[in-house]
Image (cartoon, rainbow, N blue to C red):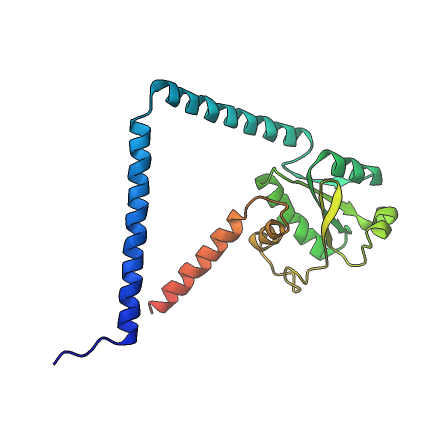
Length: 209
């Protein structure tokens, strides 16, 4: 005599049907898009190509503008007035306040230099707090290193010390990238995503044993 299906079996069947329906909907959407492209005239395709070229050109010009403003690398602010100029010239400015002798600051600068090369949408700078008494007082810098995020020429976020990343100082570039992404200072966090995927794969490999 066959056993009656359990509640778990019924839930699994419902999930399977939902997955099938979603896949069917996606397939229909792809078919519709292919049909739309196939039925386009030469003029319509030319307009799409022209729009795409214009978007690529605008993006390249923006990248060049960022590079002209010092984006793409981690630079040191030597004069306090440079900080205000950088905040004015860049929509998004990420600044580390630290000291030359601060070992946690040195580690953070290495991570930030890596991110600066990957995320041209923000400018990355650092300030030696000992040589910037006006800035440290105005921004209430009381712990080093401190990250000050300036957006639209206004302080948007401020992280004093490492507690919001990892108090031990043993954090990855991806973790710092994710924090800045949450702060809306950089557009995405591919390094963090790759680190999470790698961890998941390692855990899956362990489960296989």
